[in-house]
Length: 113
Image 1: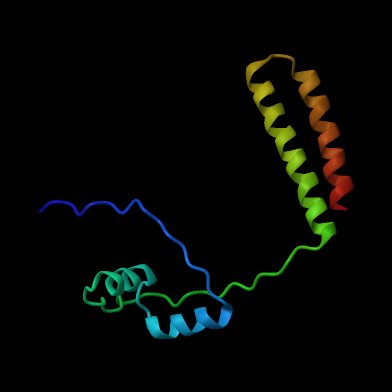
Image 2 (image 1 turned 45 degrees about the vertical axis):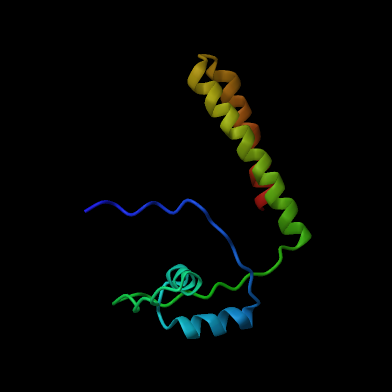
């Protein structure tokens, strides 16, 4: 039996929280992509898959400016840590790498606590 062609094109939709709640109710456990594809292509809407777990609702909130700044600083430290790890793997000068790691650790402790 030949394999069906892979789906390589992706499109996205945006919903309000209430719209998505209504959509989930109408889906009744069916896969959103499969139902949308069937409706748009005039095919039969698939039955729900047995044992499918209900969608988990994720509550999101905006970061405070302080949280955003902390994330920026931690990203900066992570970038430096990656550079140091690369240096440690390519050079034999372990003292300078360890020294830089100690200063990064101090910075992480300052930010975190």
